[in-house]
Image (cartoon, rainbow, N blue to C red; front, side):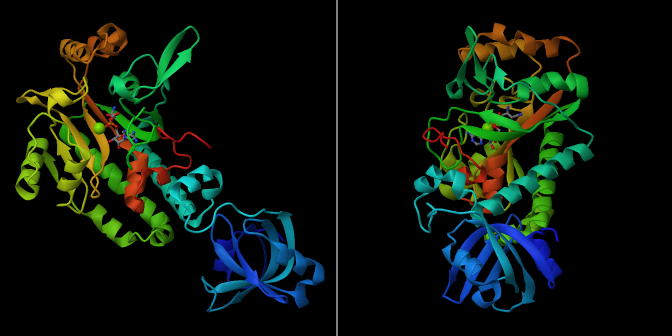
Length: 430
Ligand code: 4AD
Ligand code: MG
C-alpha cells in the first residue's frame, strides 16, 4: 500500500489507507486516543484504540506531542461528529519524528510568532495563505503566457537607484558598491527592444524606514513592460491581469478563502465588475467633498488619503495622472496637461496601493533634469538613455506588490503574513 494525502482519503471515503503527517491535536484516555493528523492537504481525526493497536503502539500514541510526525494505517469511516465527515480507525501507528513541547500555543503575541516564524508557518492559517499565494502566482504566469509575453530576468545587483535614493540598500561589491534592486523596470525597458512583451516576478528591496502594515524591506514585485502601449491600454491590462489572477486563486482555493473568512463569491463578483478609473485631481475632489480632506495638487497621496478615498468604493480603483513633481524621473508629462504624469496607481478597496505603473518618458533631457533635481548623476543612467537613442518606441509597464494583493484578498491586517519570512526594518531573523 502507498501513502495517500488526507484530501485523497476524504475523497475516497472508504477502505484501508495509509496516511502520514503531523499531530495537530491530541486527546483521550487510557483506552482511546483521538489524534487530529494534518498534512499539506487537510486534517483528519484518527481514532486509536488500545485493544486494536496493542499495548506498545498505544503507549506511543499516548506519548505523542503536538507536531510529532507519524505514519498511520487504518480504515476510513463516515462519522458525522468528525470535522470533515470522516475519521480514520487506526490499525497501526508508527512514530517518525518525536516532538518536544511546541513553542507555539494559542493567543501568543505577533512578535513571539515572528521569532518562531519557521514553526509558525505550519499553522492552518499560514498554510491557507501560502496556498492562495501559490495559486495566484501560478495564475499570473498563465495569464502572461496566454497573452504571448516572455519572462525576462534581470540583475538584483544594480549600479543606481530607480525609485528614489532614500530606500536603497547598499551592498559591498568587490572594490566598490552596488544596490539591491528597487525594481526590474529599467532593465525591463531595455528588454522590450528584444522581446516587446515581457514580465518578471522577483525579489525587490526597499529600505523602508517606517513601521507600517504595508511595507516590507524585501517583497516580490510582479512587473510587466510592453512596447507600443499607452496609459489607457496599460490600466485596462492591469485590471484584466488582477481579475484573472484573483478569480483563478479563488476558484482553486475556495476552502482556504472560507477558512480565512473571506467570501469567495464576493471576490468573484468583484472580478466581474467594471473597476472605476479617475484622475488624481478627481480623487482630490472626492475626498475634499466627502471627507473634508483638503490636499493641494502636487503631493503624492498618503495612507490616510488613500484610505479615505477607498472608503467610498467596493472594488479597486485606478487613479491616474498624479502630479509630475511627486513622481519618478521616468514618468512622462501629459502633453495636454504638463503638470500631470501619464501614470497610475491601483488602490485596493482596503485603501492600499497595490500597483504602480506608467508610460515611460522618451525625453532624455527632461529625465536628466529630473534626476539632477533628485541629486543623481545622469551620467550613471546613460546606458538607460540608449534605449531612447536607438529606435525609441512608446512603451509602458507596471509593478504589482504581490504581498499587498495577497494581504488584501486574504483579509490580513499586515503584509507580513503574506510572505513566509518577512523582512522589515526591525525583523531579519529567522
Ligand atoms: O509604485 P512602485 O514603487 O513602482 C515601481 O517600482 C515601478 N518601477 C514599477 C513598474 O512600473 N514596473 O512599486 C510597485 C508596487 C507598489 O504599488 C506596491 O504594491 C509594491 O510595489 N511595493 C511594496 N510592497 C511591499 N513593501 C514595500 N516596501 C513596497 N514598495 C512598493
Ligand atoms: Mg508607487
